Amino acid sequence: MRRLLDLVILTFFLTACGEAEENYEKQKSGTLEHEGLLMETKIEHRDDETEISIQVTNKSDHPESFTISDGHAFDIRLLDEKGNVQYDFAEGKMFTQAVITEELESDETHEWTETLPADVYRNEKIAAAEVTVRIDEWRGNAVTDDDLRIEKPWDL
Image (tube, rainbow, N blue to C red; front, side):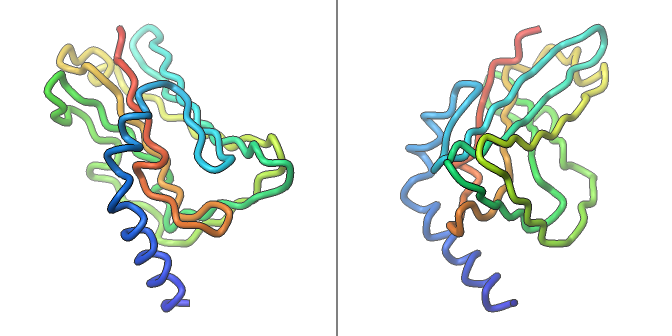
């Protein structure tokens, strides 16, 4: 099991080397598709809170599974105009250390939501939200964070 995990991690790093910048430039919208996996993000500002919804949908014609190496399934980072991090969802949190595999039927969607408190919502320095799904494997292939990252404007 450990050897398989090492192989997956090695593949992950090798795949990331040549494609990171190219993929990141394509991901300035609220949706992107990676090998039949559709990722969508929605940011909804309400009263004194913001809800960020992250969905992944299997767009293939048959069931597919994805694997996440721990309970840290997604990242939300809020950036100022210079790209400096003003808020990091994961900062100070602990996550389950267990491999999670989930199967999605054709056109089935898995959704995560996170509600941000008022002090984060009202931070005037925030210019953009960077949302990343941290899937390690899809269709048996390694996936990098850059493959599933969307940056959206933070319009109040």
